[in-house]
Every structure is written in C-alpha cells, then in structure tokens.
Image (cartoon, rainbow, N blue to C red; front, side, top):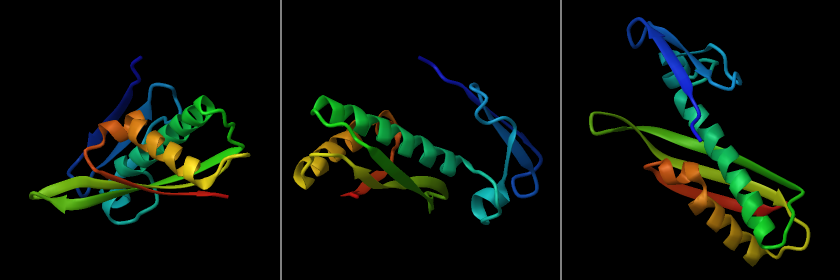
Length: 140
C-alpha cells in the first residue's frame, strides 16, 4: 500500500505560505505557513498532522491488539503531543507523547497497560518516528 500527500510552497520562509493536500481528498489545499508552524497562528502545520497520524495509528493498533487478546473496546481516545525543538542548528521532532483514555469492558489495569504498551511499540507511525515516544494510558 502506498498513500500520497503533497505540499506546495511559495515565497520566503517567514513571509511565504503553502498548501497541503492528501491523495484521499481529506485535506485539499489546506494552508500552512511559518506563522501556523512557529507562532501559534490558527491553521495547520506538519507536526500537527504527524500528531493526528500518530494518534490515529495508535488507536487502530490498540484496537487490533485488544481484539487479539479477546477484548472489544467501547472507545479509545488518543491525543498525541508532538514536540518540535531546536537541534543541531535546525529543528527536529524530538518527542511524541500519547495521552490515551479507553473504555474496555472486562479488562484489568495491568492487562490494559501491557496491551497499550504493545500498541505504542507496534504502531507503524511509532516505528517511523525518530523521537522519544511516551504515553499515559488510563481506563475511563
């Protein structure tokens, strides 16, 4: 399987802007800029999209691992916080922290934590990130 996304950029780093699109059409010409990435202006940025990908990937991986262990989740809510920091004269994504709350009938906390850790390690997006990946998981 291969999935595509594209970006176009016009202008200088600080004054320019760009658009992001996905092959599925989920994002079509979504604007982004230096200000949306580094100055908190409303809009998207690459790190936010990586966070969405990581949260979505983890939730699906966790659902699969729970199912293999005989559990069916009622709900898995995951938020990924991606850290972009100065490094080696530029910037780097240094971490992604997952906050997970899940409702899973019949599971004890030790089993829940073990299966969540397996999902964190096995999620394809976790595997591609060259960053520290941490997690707080709780039954809710």
